[in-house]
Image (tube, rainbow, N blue to C red; front, top):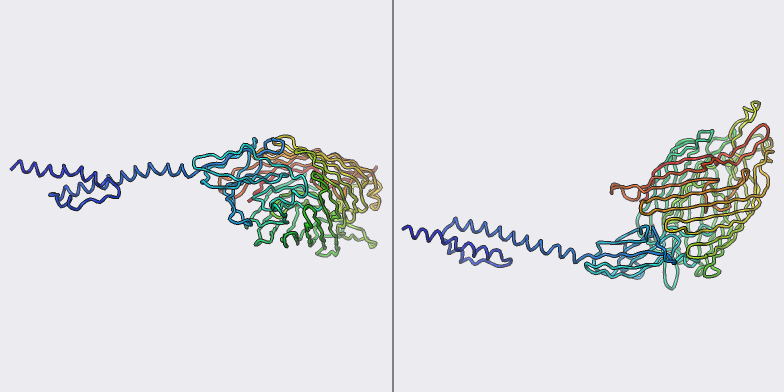
Length: 610
């Protein structure tokens, strides 16, 4: 009896290894007969439990061995160097990895967007095998596209992708209009035509189809003028939002708000419409509050402005710009200003550009500026309104009707340098100049105050601007202007009609810009030297070098980490202007007149671009 029991007990143990082997083979079925031969119900449950565990272990081993191989085989990389025409690395150039376009008129959205380091190097990892288009662009250079074939577990390497400068107007009109695919800044002509253009081999177009996305800029800041006797300090915000409108253009809304003495209040809407292949129409509508400093007039005055401009690319590198600007006071005043705009530019050679134009001269000092999909956005400083005395003894605000006639050219000297020469004739009318009256003796203490004067007259002169690249991270610019203009006259202290007299002027301006890609730091240093009495109705350099007059200024911005908590790029900004506190002034034995525009100013804030 004992021997049969031992045989029956061993039977399930002998079959268990066979069942485990059968179950561990994926996709195989276990015959039902093997279970029918099992005499013990308990043994059947044990075998089933161990068999399931074996199947799971086998699947895990097979899956673990196959997943890394599949992942490694599916990815590749692209790397290389971006250099200029002289073979020097281009730091901060933008590199896009694009899928090959499905149709000639449509391009894929960027798969990767990179920025070159101090050595001009870029690395794009995690790219699926296939064919791609690599597009490299930098400010002032023609964008370049190259094809790339990415293979699994391989690196596609470009020893050097060369970008050459936009040497002619034809080059500039071949640039892509989409800021995601091209540099945002190009050389400006006299009519401020700096939009990027679409590249086509046989034809050039004014504007290309852009990605329908919303982009914007917001800056919050606090500024103070420590040496200003008025205690001019305020907090403010600048903002701009750009949106693609279907496939015909852009809509840009920008503005300024602030609280305190001298805080600007402004709102503007700008629409750019692509009317056919060779016309770009721009229409702007704005409203702002202006600063008035005169007896009997409210401290703030409203102004409505409307402008319309057509940029017409007649043929190739031949462009005409024409339009009109209209402005009218509101809230108690009725002054009106209507100024036409006309400009023309063309290439006179492979490295020579010629331009001429008639443009409004109502530009003011710039508080800040950015470049968006619609062009350059300028946030102006608050400026005083010209005030004229009436025979009745009252004062009346006057609109700015200043304009400039100018012509000149630009010569590209090399990959790293260029020179621009321009002659101008200004007509000044209704330009407000704010002056602070300070008594020198005690007898005229009651005469201390702030007034806005009406500057009328003209100026004419010549400007020369030389630009040169100073290595990987720096760009330099020096400008010289001379001619006949206006300056403060001491007779104007007692006779306001004689405040401005004609005189010769000389201006020297130097600027150095630095961009450190690795740390995300930008530095701009400007030094400007001019006569202490000179008063410019229109800046001789039109703000191309210095946006604030006069002397030593620094602008520092530092990119800040966002830790993916907010979209876009966050930066801290420190703006210090006129650190030597140089001011245009004039005096006699009794009083002194000092310009209120040029006091030492410090501005700190944060800016977000998305």
